[in-house]
Image (cartoon, rainbow, N blue to C red; front, side):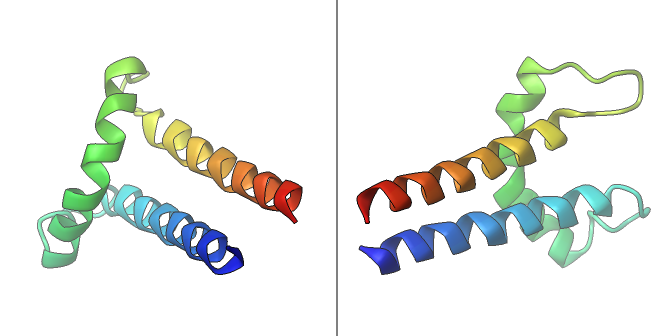
Length: 87
């Protein structure tokens, strides 16, 4: 059971870093058109899309990725609490 929680925690951690990398790529012209950018788009956009539908951009700033990362952080914390309760 411990290994399952560790694996899920690690997957959430890696996905969070992938989201951060994808967000930072928007600051560099042409970065999202690279092979890494298209890969990250395929794995990050399905998760970011519902947040973009709910949270409108503030001018030219899209804050939905920040909310998406916070949700992953809460999931990670909730997983730790759940694991602590099961031990």
